[in-house]
Length: 429
Ligand code: URA
Ligand code: CA
Image (cartoon, rainbow, N blue to C red; front, side):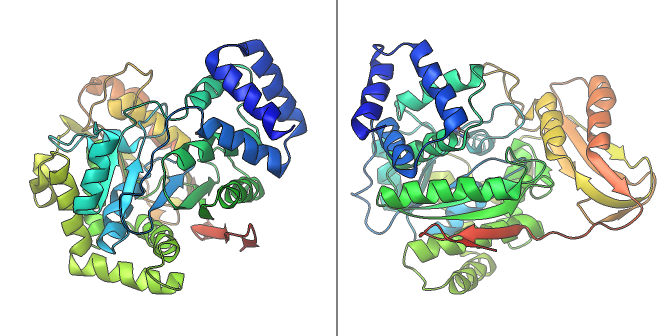
C-alpha cells in the first residue's frame, strides 16, 4: 500500500468514514499477509498523527524514553526513571494503568500517599525542567486511531500480528515526543511472545520504525520466565523500588535497570559505551543520589517523600498469609501469568476497567528460580484486605502454589538478557 492509501484508511477510520468492517478486513489481511517495512512505518506514522502529539523541545538535552512489552511485577520504571534522571538524562514519561494480570506504573505510583499522575502535558514539561523527571498519565487524546484499532483487533482475533503490534506500540512512543528510545522486549512463559526469535523479530521491526522516524532506538530482549524481582502489587513494588534505589534490591530487577539505564545514557550521549553507563549508574545507587531523585520526584508530584525512609507510611495489608511448598526440590519456574492473575484477584489489579485497586494487596515471592526449597517452606506470602482471607487462603494460595514448578534437579540458569538489537536493526546475542 502507498503512504497515501494508508493515510486515507487511518484518517477515515478516526473520522468515521471508514467503518469497522472495512478496518477489520484490513487488519485480517495484514494478519495473514504481513506488511513491508515501509508500509509498517507509514502505518505507524499515520496512527501517530491521528491525534495530538507532544513536543519536548522546550526541555534541554536529549530526551530518552523507555518502553517495555509488559511483564508481571515489573517495577523497572519506578527505579529507572529517577536513576537515569540522577545521571542527567531528562525523563518525561507517559505511563499506563494495569489491566488484567499485568500491573501499571500509574497504579504503583498512586500507592504513595498524595502522589498524583494527573498532570497536564504542560505541567509535565515544567516538572522535567525543574526536577529532571516526571511520570504522568495520558491526560489528553494521544493516538486515538490506535485506541480504536486496538479494540477492534481484540475482538477480531487480529491482535497477534507483528506489524500491527509494532505500529501500535511505536505510534504511542513517537507521539510522546522523546528523541531516542530503549525498548525492553520480553520473552518467555510470562511474556506475550514466548519464543525468543519472535521477540527478536518484533524488536527489529520496532527499531526500524524508530530509526525510520528519526528517533534512535535500541531493543533489549529479556527473559520473563518468572515475575521480576520479588514484589507483585502496588505498594509492595514501591517498597521494592526504594530498596533497589538503595542498592539492596533483588538481583534481577537491579540488573535489568542497569542494562536498560546504561543504553538510555548511551543514547543520551552521556557515556560512550554501555559499560561506562553501568558504572555511572552503579555509583548513583551507592551514593544515594538516585534515591534522592526519587524523593524529589515524589514531592514534585504531591506525594509524601517520607515513605522512602519509613515504609509503614505506605498502605499496609490487613492480613498476610504464607504459601508453603508441597514438596522439596529446586524451583525451576514460576509461572508469571498465574502469579499476575492471583495478585489481580487479591485486588492488586483490575478485573475490569471499573474495578477499584487495593494498593496494599499483592504477593511477595520468598523463592526465585534456582532456589532450593524443602517441604513446608514458604514459597511466597500473599497480602490482602479487600478480598476475604478465607477465599484468598483457598483459591489464591492454591494458584500461587501451583505457579511454582518444583523439580528434583536444579534448573539450567538462563541469563536475564538474551541479546539486543542495535539502532541499525542488527541482532546481537
Ligand atoms: N501493546 C500495545 O500497545 N499494542 C499492541 O498491539 C500490543 C501491545
Ligand atoms: Ca517486582
